[in-house]
Amino acid sequence: MKRAKHPIHLLLAAVILLSVAPVHAQGKWTKLAPFPEPAEELLGTTAGGKLYVFCGLAPGWKPMGLVYEYDPASHRWKALAPMPTRRGSPVAAAVGDKIYLIGGATSPQGSKEPAVHPARPHSSVGSVEEYDPASDVWGAPRARMPSARSAMASGVYGGRIYVTGGEGQDAQGMYTFRALEAYDPAANAWTVLPSMPVSRHGLAGAVVGNRLHMVSGSVQSAGTGIEVNTNSHDAFELDK
Image (cartoon, rainbow, N blue to C red; front, side, top):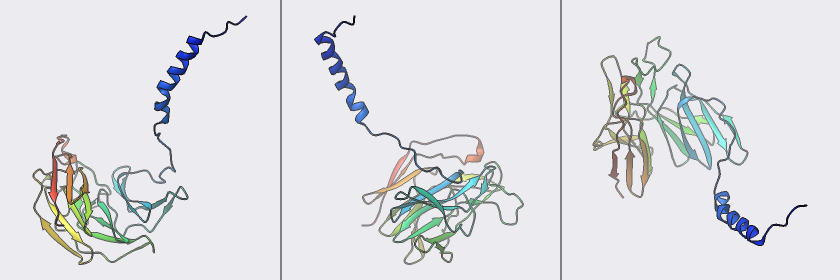
């Protein structure tokens, strides 16, 4: 015959349940539609309530020109018009109703090298491509950035795109950038601004208020085999 639980046992059980309840009330991770073409050196931005993913490097570091749109309302990915040029690790930013893709890395012109290998020479491009999500059309190439590079960070403020950091490699060197440059889509023009205190690539960038924040990154190019990450956090005051 089972013994009835003592009231004190019931009270303790209730206390325990109450004490752990907040853990179950917290947020949780949710799996969404998987990305159709997994790759590295992808980049993304949002426009019109949708997520757009561009570029990438396929296995073997082969540059890609993929463009995908994710609609949270229908929970699915849709392939869109591919980029005019294939490259990995550019930056993307939305200004108004257009998305701009800037810089990145690809195979050197005239080279038979099919990949952007981190230990071999490759080219950083200064191209600025304009994409219209509404019509799924790429516009004519825009003004080239002053310092061609890849693995940058960016932020948007006052209708301008601010790009800083980055890396480049050629037959003579593997290097990182301090450069800060701003692109004005309305004028189709670049402005060179004061450089960051510490050169680096693969950094995080965002605009908070009227300051462009640049955080961490590596001061060495990826192909050197030496990992030197910095804890630098620098902010640039933007014109109001």
